[in-house]
Length: 138
Image (cartoon, rainbow, N blue to C red; front, side, top):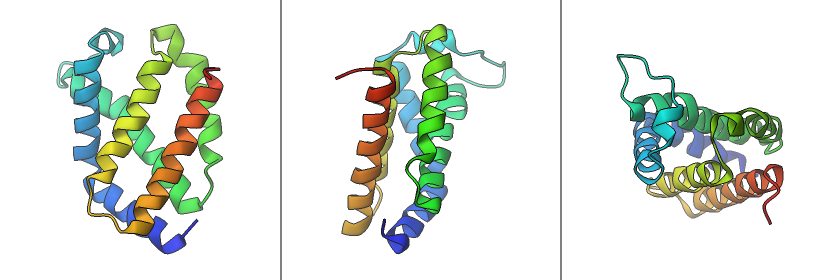
């Protein structure tokens, strides 16, 4: 992993986290309105804000950790845990894989260098393969 590119990417993700997470959460709710029924809404939050806070921000923090520690395997335990818990609440492979794909689509909209784009593609593929593996999707 290119340490310099990883550090620059983490800095961009940190600076743009709120916007990225809101965009992904909004897109998820438009594509999968059933997700709003799965959220425990608090009166001060919209469904989009709540989904961003409980799911997309968690993904963002996980991606940043993977980049900071140069250890994609950090995601293994988190994704495996999510697979053990979230389906009981109606979260499916389609929801999880869409969140990963759309998160990285948002990241690619940032002004990234070729090295950062390559790193983004590498991490995205790792996450998608991991989600497919834990959900046993071919």
